[in-house]
Length: 159
Image (cartoon, rainbow, N blue to C red; front, side, top):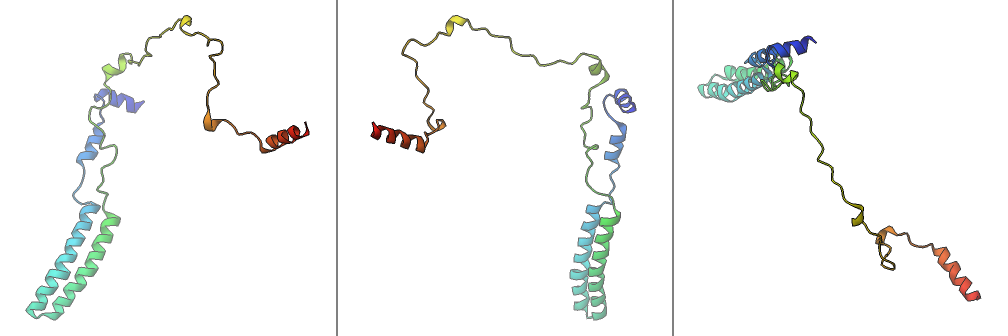
């Protein structure tokens, strides 16, 4: 009941949900993984080639190792330690989409059935004598039994 009273006092919204939507941090899994990718590109491609051109092979090797293993550490740490970047269902609720207190006190409007229609009995007439015909059901009618037809043929020969 506390939930309902809080909705009624805040015009159908929950202030906690607004805090969740505003409290999203820059440090999340998505940004951590992107930083790891940029780290890999910077150290393995840019810095390694720059140190190789300058003739400092020790720093070029160290830069390549730092790029590869640093990227693995950054991505793993981002996925394990940082919060998710996805918006929760509760934070994406429409603001003011819930009913207000005035709406709750008024009776709800319910859909109604269409007005009844009556058709007089005289419209329905039995078929005229000899005008009635069995419906053609086609594939719905069952074929006769093979043994029954064969038996009928045998009885005709005996007669």
